[in-house]
Image 1 (cartoon, rainbow, N blue to C red):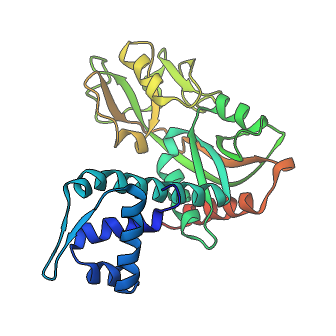
Image 2: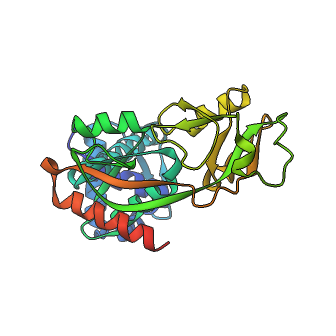
Length: 282
């Protein structure tokens, strides 16, 4: 019974089609070969699976009872084949800040569509966690806000414009059509990660690494104001926070793909190319 997958496939197909000839045609077999396969399975199981007559084919009560088990075996084998194929193909691990999740998804699609395909395991991580994972070899590469640590190689730089300010819903700036840097004097500005906000007055308060969601909780609690990219403004809906356009000139966060020079592989180079391609095309 352990080696009778082919016979179970035949059983399931005859049960579906209720015809030995049609089931045989579906599986590219002759009708006698199909009948022999069903007979072998019946002998192994010790029960009759089908009632056959010159006019029709019907499942027996035993056949109806055993059919779900055969389907489960077939499904499990299919899952085994799919997972083994996934594990056998080259795979790289990429850490990325949630802010650039759409870019990370495009990279995965590009690498999956190439020949041969390369699998990508994504790990959403703030800067600190991503740097540690990269240093420990847990990920092949990471998208990091620059400057990246000196021990890593970087390429494929890109910028995310910061053009909004998150303020508490009841803040005096919440109803303004636009905020300028001159209105931020005396305010506390939250800074995700280790980068300052150049050209903005006010006092800085560090927030969790690249975690804008956690920083927005601080905004709602009245702990400070948060410069934020429109990329996130379009996807966040909160009643306790307002997003006001920020006229701060060329305020932006620069990111780059980073990796360890000791762990260069052909798959990593394909990743670098995929990131560059994804930045220039949609």
